[in-house]
Image 1 (cartoon, helix red, strand yellow):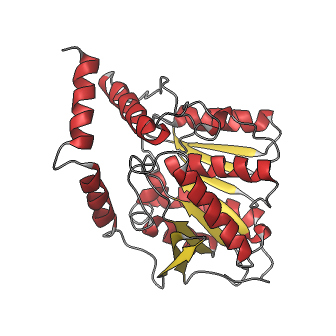
Image 2 (image 1 turned 45 degrees about the vertical axis):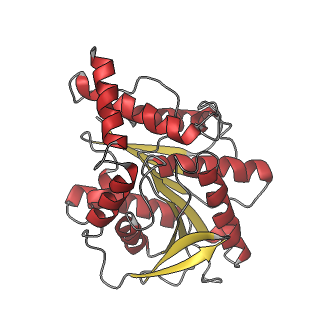
Length: 301
């Protein structure tokens, strides 16, 4: 058995074999992150947004009417509004915003375009509730960051009102099988990272070409989109996704800012409740959102 075959066998065990089934992974992630502290005064509220389950995050708004429309990560397979509620709460606290995180459908039960359909339905429903686009900012991490860019492409093509800015943490914007650098690790770790990404991408893309711009938005036309703030670790596998996204946005005339932080941590902002540097990363994103979305205070969701 060669190294690639052995790694692939290991990944299939991790993703499919009890007790490491996808269902178990989802359960463990949600219950582990439930232990993460959230800011005092945070309130959560379940509701339906365009027929899609969603979770409000309240208690930190400054009266401006600013709303963070958050798309969670998890490789399109795990993750939920529950697993990411602490991260949304901290971003809301630091940006003095209300947050909403939609519970989009996940692969492999519901492959592409289900997640994008749900994200679009939720955004349009938010507008229909009377929240103006000028009061909305997008945010997302990992797969959710890529989904946020795909959502912007759909909104732009349809002529829908666009949010005012997007904060993307370690966004996954290229689902094609390609080499992802992992400079701070030995040869085995990059192989595993690439195989894991390809395995997740296969479940989400299904029979669709993973280079389709709505699956891999780095291949799309990014012109006319709102300003992007993209952060990633210098040593993480998705650093190249972040760099290419920013280059492509700039080529298309869309303002984009790249922040490469030290180390190999993917979505280091998730450590904000415990770790000062991670908190400062999230603070930088919060400042960006406030800068580009001062809002007007005329509509509160």
